[in-house]
Image (cartoon, rainbow, N blue to C red; front, side, top):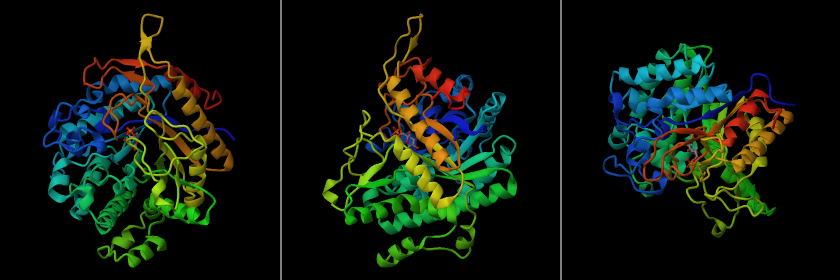
Length: 467
Ligand code: BG6
């Protein structure tokens, strides 16, 4: 089976990595504005010029050009996020910032002009800084109220412009990166498991409430969850490794289990009981959780191996999850292991578990691209390595379709180069379009089409036949 006619081909960006304009038109600070080194380094007191995200790729002023480039590739969908602190600068205000709302009006109108469907993540690693510092982010139950106000505001405003939504980007990243994932200001080392499960509960309730609001306000709109999809292989056929794998996968799946099935699975309730974890719930929470998502989306960059022997564990540079290296797989310049078949496996795994439409919200290769003369008076990047990576992954998507999996679409991550989330580097590039910005912040911000730009355009126009 090949890609269905309405397959949503496209790409993805996140506000904090592309927009820049970090204080423009009334925007408040977000946690990213004080994370100059991504998850790899400490936060800064104030925004510092070394933080490349403050300018990003200046999408805030160049969105028309960027969306036009997406249209030229034939994008059907553009997954993006709204910067919460543009709409509610501190996060707990009663009234939104009109200028912020107007910016996304312009972005969505431009998408519509080119027939591109916007798919919007409500919270992509960019909690308003004030909420992080004042309320300790999602550790506080009050966050549900603030998030609900934000959701109602944007649903109301964009009801005729946006059909596809997602609540929290990689919601399970809370486990590894509580600040980036859940706006928790308390240092990670000081958090207990109880704290993290409690924060997750608040996010689940907020997410379920967002589903309910969306369905009430815009009946034909769809809400998805979004998890970091890094499933495991057992390191060996040893039964101990198999059990370790089952437990590791539950850490990934717990989040989408709740958001997709609408209740806490028995394995987690048992875990809480055995470990003295007691989650504070209010009456009505469990009923609310029954508002499950319409589709399941995930990012996929790598698989990992799990072993019962903990001494085997290592972590790739800036890798968002930990695991044991798979001796059969090559890796990227940043040590992320490349496993196209793992994408087919992940698609089947999710579909077997949920039987809901799946959307691949992110996938791609971060590489240190070199801009070269294109021989016609311009510049380009000959990124055959990226083409190979994407082609191999998309062929596995095609096989998953043939397995019977319902895949709605595919968004290539960082379709235009952006600042990296984990390492805050500019040189870790994923795009079909090169952005002239260097590690020291210099550069004209001019956009150049890479070789992969034309390759992806052909893939889309042939609906996958040219793969
Ligand atoms: C995902 C995030 O984890 O991976 C993105 O949702 C991020 O925001 C992407 O950019 C790639 O990671 P990185 O660290 O290479 O930018």
